[in-house]
Image (tube, rainbow, N blue to C red; front, side):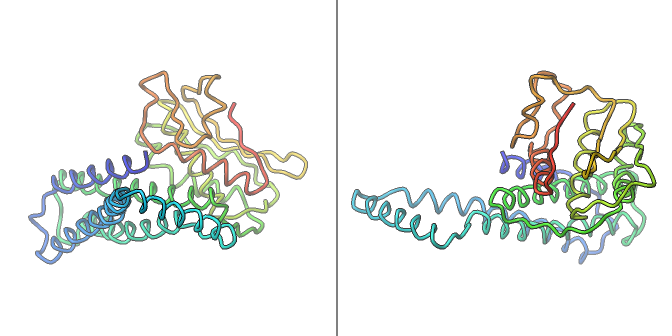
Length: 295
């Protein structure tokens, strides 16, 4: 599922790039944009296709070779118990880095063109550039989700805890989410009280949790609003993200935090994505010593 989403976003990005008008670009700028895109494509092919080819080629051989490989695998597994090395996480981290570098170049160049660095763009050109930036950021978020999921699965993610003003963080999340909400004429409301006590949490991860929940709420809300509220319960702060959307069937509510799960039963619910966002939210909340539920 992860590789299919990567392929979809890369193909979508390439399509939007090909529809863009480059009349006003200098030869050097056009060449740099093309180089960044080709670098991203090559990284994917090298890391994924190359790995698959390598693994496939090793499945052939005689019985003696099979036995020898089996013996090496057992020995390697025993050694790994004494010296744990998560090669899967290492591969994910390396692939993520290889993808991010050219991807950031594509996003940066597209944003520069939108700002008029190569002269005014036509309305169609601005639209195509905006779609390139949007697709690039979606792919970037997908890479980040896969990397976080890998770290959480191997219990290799640490928190930097400190007292935080949750209302200020919620306000930043709402501000950053406004473009998504305005596109659907939705209202975003910060209902957190001004006198809420500080909460001990990792600032970046709290931003990530709220951003994910608010974006998910916006995605499945056609009309109305999305709001963030909070209340103190004993020594814990209970944060709530609520919306006026279609809701989730009772039979599926216990599964929405499972990896790759997609709510089914209504074609209007299909919005794409990896199905990792809520899983990551749950694991980050639990890492803070809390719980997450849906009602």
